[in-house]
Length: 321
Image (cartoon, rainbow, N blue to C red; front, side, top):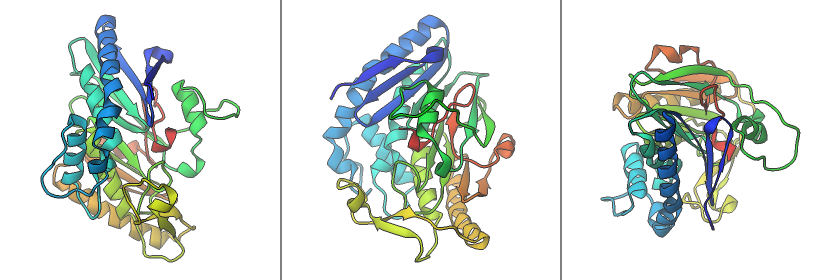
């Protein structure tokens, strides 16, 4: 299995290695940006092998002191350990942790801003005075992965006419705020969820922390309702780190009161993480109902929400890959 890269429009790059599928963009002096892209590519080629070497431990529940060796693996463990709520393994923060590793290559003189979009979990570099526009995409029931790939300039998977991807709202992430990570989780995404949220988007200091937090908050948006379809994770993916734990596979149309109750349960978890200084804000969405755990006035225009990012709102949801 070999890593591949390809240039994209607007000076961005597409890196792919096995399950890791990344889009990177950066602004600044041409020489500095080129050097950063080169360093990121060199580092990217080694990441998957390091994770595979420690995969059994990465799929084990968080417990005791961290015994992992790799820098990305340890970042995964510490992020998940900080937000621990019920069953969780370091894999809950894998995409964000890889994004954090690569964004480090752009934290250098001459690069004004950069973003590493790992299948919807995003790490940011913002020099003083820089900002990035973040768009929100809420409902994965209407998410078209190929339309998103068209927006990114990434080759399509499968046939179909070119299309656009409309976002549900937008806000700005500015350098003076502590947010450098954005991540989304939900039962409709590419990863499994124990809850019923269509999407939970979290902003945090790092992509790893946002990734782990989005997972536990999305798990908490839940109801005890026999109509909700659940199956053991191992029946859906034989090597899932969740084993036989039931994950959500279908959610029927629910009444407003039930939706608000489920969202309130998730919001309590998000608020606790916020009070502990682990996240900045979160937007929880379920069947058109929205609950925000806010920490900045600029998020007030977010509307419904999950995630998309770039200068002009680059699509970035978990379903993208």
